[in-house]
Length: 248
Image (cartoon, rainbow, N blue to C red; front, side):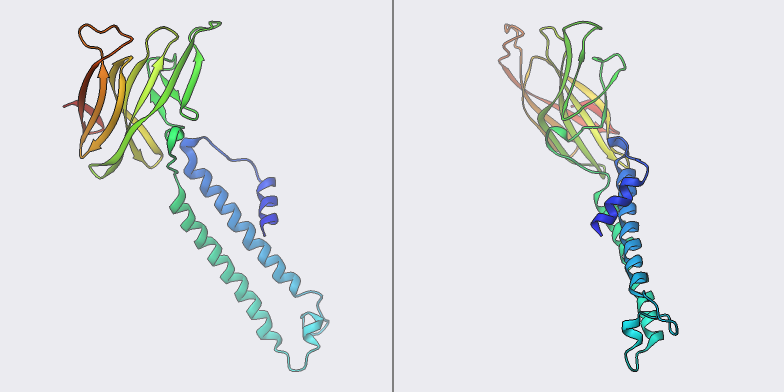
């Protein structure tokens, strides 16, 4: 059955889409898989009815047996085919509900999310494995680099799954800028809803989410610190309200 399913999917049109359409992709692939398994089972059932004898339309090895119930044999085969089809279709529906859309983890947790940023000409960026790189200017050796930090948190706010993460951006100069981003889970996956700047060349130690409050523990430049070497340890607090970050 695995071979038949792979053959059926291979000859079908390629309908795979981007990460933000992951739910539709899973539904198409699982539906094709269930249809392939059911179709193959029905084919085997039909072939089991061959070669047919001239009188009863049954395989000759069965029709020659004394007292063989021809009608019961055919009905059992039909019931088997119908029951298998129902199990495969309902099983596929359960898998669709459980696996789509997908929540990844680690540096790829927000791959496919369109973040708003001032560092690209389009004003947005989509990360791949937690990273995006492009030339700062056409033909320039300098690069715009946007990274997803390993600092972040997730929780439930107002009944919705909410996440916060830190994006690190640089444009080829000496500055490295840290931004706290807010994301909310919806029917199409994670959506970037707001950003709060944390500073240039700061050190983010931890990010936590407690109720509606996001707490960022970081070190930033004190009054006498050069930009390269922050020493002032402090805590920044933000309140999540209607998908926005409010300084708390």
